[in-house]
Image (cartoon, rainbow, N blue to C red; front, side, top):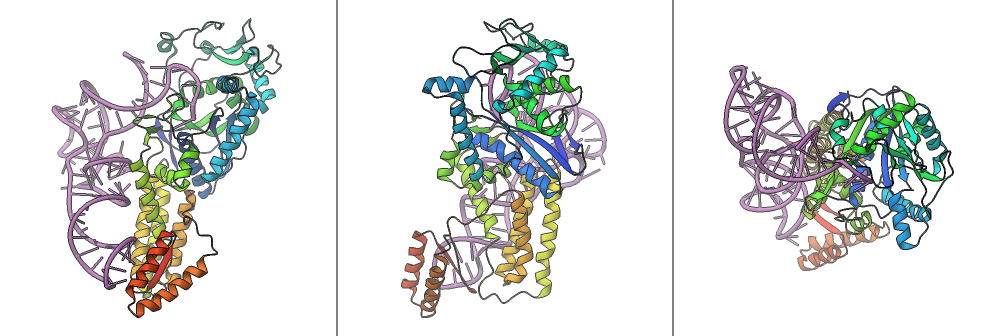
Length: 464
RNA sequence: GGCGUCGUGGCCAAGUGGUAAGGCAAGGGUCUGCAAAACCCUGAUCACGGGUUCGAAUCCCGUCGACGCCUCCA
C-alpha cells in the first residue's frame, strides 16, 4: 500500500484514488516573468518522479501543470522593458518548456494558462458571488469573503483570529475583511484586460488554479502539489474557492516539496540568490540535478552547493558503473554464482517498491539500487558474461528509468566508436609486446578526448 | 509573536519502540606493467536536559538551534 504524507492532515495516509487505477494530479507551475531557476526545477523533478512512480505501479496518471501568464510581476516586468506582457510570458513559457525537456521531465497531460481559462474563471467567480462567498467592490475588484468559509485555514493550520492581528488593507483596496483576497482585479490603465460582468480586469492569482482544475480534472482530484511556500496563502485559497463553489472536498492529498537552499536560504527570485536552470545545465548534466533530489527527501529543504552537486555526480557515476558491459573475454560464472544476480535483482525490485511506497522515500530506494550495482560489479569482476549480467542490468535500467535518470554517456557520437575499438585493438597488441610507453600514450590521448580506457585481466573496456 | 518542518559519523542521508541502510570524502588492502575502475576492510549511540518503558534515535515535556510560511514566490 502506497502511503503519502498529506499536508492537510500532517500524517502519512494510505493512498486511495477516487477512481481505482487512476490518479488525477495537479501541480502548480510557474509564474512566467523571468527565467526559471533550479528551485523550480526541484519542484518539477519531485513531481515528475512521483508521477513516474505512479505509472510504474500501474496507475493511469492525468498530470496537469499550469502556467500563470498574467499577473502583477509580468506586467511590471513588461513595463520595465517596454514589451507586451502576454508576449513576454509566452517567451518564458517556451524557455521553461525547453528546460523541462532538458531535465527529462515528462510532458504534462495539459498545460493550462490563466489567459486561456478566462471563461471558466469568470463562471466560477460569478458562482461564488451568487452563493455569497464573494462580492464585487465599487472599483470593479471582486474579493473572496473569507469569513463566510468556516474552515478557512485548515490546510496551513491557521485560525482567522490569529491572522487578523497583522493584516492590513492596502490603500485602494475595498475589502470587507483584510484577509479577503482578490478573485478579480479591475484593470489599471495600460494593463492587459478582459471584459467581465464586473468591468474590465484580470483574474487574481488563486482563482486560475481552481478554475483549471474544475475545467480539466473535475470537481475532485486525488493529488494537488507544489512547493511548500504555496501552502499559504495560495493553496489555502484554492481550497476555499473550490470547496465553496462545489460543496465537495477538492483534493484528497496535498503534497509539498521542500525548498532548495542556496547559501543557507531559500532560493527565490525575490531574494535574488538564484541559479537559473540554463546556467545549471551549461555546467552539469540534468541527471545531476535529478540525482541531487533523489538523494534527499522531497519534503525537506535541500542544499544546493558545489559539494552536494559533486557528490550527486559521483553517485550517478556509481549507478552507471553497474551498467557497464561484461569484460570482453569473460569466462562466465557457474550457474549457482550467476543465480545470485537474479536473486539480487528481484530483492532490489521489491525493496525499491516497498521503500518508495513509504511516501516516496527516494534515498532509501537509491540505496537499494546501489546494492544491486555492487552485486553486478562483483559478478563482473568474477567473470560474469553479458548474458549473465543482463537480467540484473535490465532491472537496474528499469528502476533508474522510474526515477527518470538517463544515465547516458557524456557524448558518444556513435560514429567514433569503431575507430576507438580499432585503436584499442592495436593497443592490445602493443601491450602484448610490452610497449608500455606507446600504450600509455594512446590511453592518455584518448582521455584528453574524453574517452576513458579501463584495462582488466579480461581485456580493455572504454566509456565516454 | 503565531503556524509548520526539522536537528543522525567530516559532508549528504535512510531509519519513528528492541541495541544505527546507503552515497560522497578519508585511510588501509586486493587486482593491475602502470593508471583507472571495481571489490574488500576501517568509523557515529542519533542537538541538549528531564520523563515514560524491561528496552528509545524512534513516545512525552522542556531548552537551544536551523529552515519555511504569516506580502509575491516551486
